[in-house]
Length: 268
View (tube, rainbow, N blue to C red):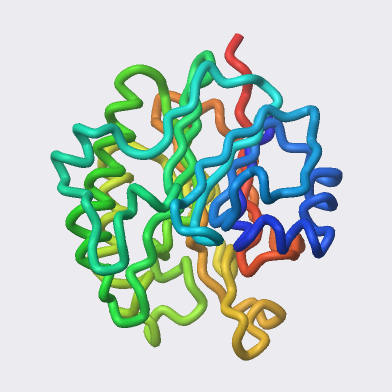
């Protein structure tokens, strides 16, 4: 099975450019997880009869949002965090609003694993959302993953809005302490690793540099490959041995992010 994740930064824009259609034709994913769809399903002119679709859109129009497309029909979808997780970690929002209303997490249950897509809140240039991210969102998301993992292995993906290690961005020294590369955000990611989840790309390619998934629009950064690796596939240890060929696809245009993928061996 080929599993892809892509922050499309507006699915309507990617469709208008013809890049989404090109992507589907070229890669033909079995499961596709999207972030930052910025649309409700009724606003998207899309006909993919081979897929079962599920959108979780933000209350605010044209903002955030996630979606999952899969050739195999999931047993069920779960949108957002369970109420007990929200209450336990006080994920009730900040001056920007309630992240639970932003369509940020979908879990899809399949026969022998969960697939989770996430669009993690950005801590903002002035770090004004770092507290929500560090004290509420990241701990709540990890707790939710562990709750799911108690029933089946978890494969989770998405735009986590953090470069974990210095090798994961082109200019680490200039970006220390800035959003996406603060100690708090990096430790939040490390907590996933410490909890037993495997960064599929980095575990396969521990020393590969210049492997990025997001580039700013400024200063011709993408052509110069001055980027960040902030889009990931992570796997429960119990299923990681079935995961192979983690890839980054920088040639796929249409968004400031590129897709990332893994292959998962079917259980015999």
